[in-house]
Length: 157
Image 1 (tube, rainbow, N blue to C red):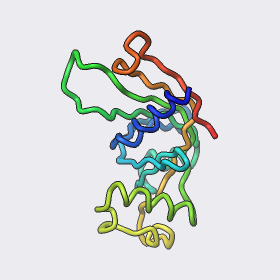
Image 2 (cartoon, helix red, strand yellow):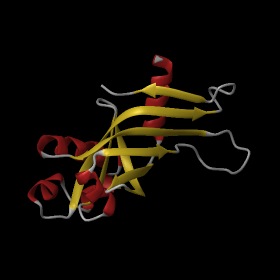
Image 3 (cartoon, rainbow, N blue to C red):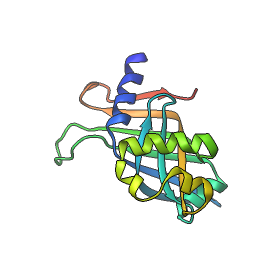
Image 4 (spheres, rainbow, N blue to C red):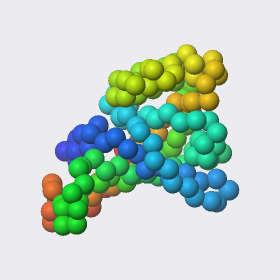
């Protein structure tokens, strides 16, 4: 199980785009956000405008699902590697916001030219930091597990 969790950790660290599914009032929604992986907590962090549908959904319902593809896409016939997960998302506040911003800015330095964590915390921007705590994850990996590519792990703390 430790080897699988290490593969999942490495995979999440390599990924860039998070396909995030939210739901409010029993209506699902999918969006795509740039994310960073917090290796210390195992969380994903992303920034989004507080007025976006997925941001509003998270305020109403923290349960999310998502997926990450961290391979260069070549086309049909390529060995599949992808990660799907269940988890909980929440808007990061106070020192958690600052930490999430720092992790995000390390991965995506251009964000520093757009807004700061202080801007978020003071409400001078519509942007917010979000954290996704991963629960159950499924790594579908035909490269490392060619005979049984569906590998499931529980990642909750």
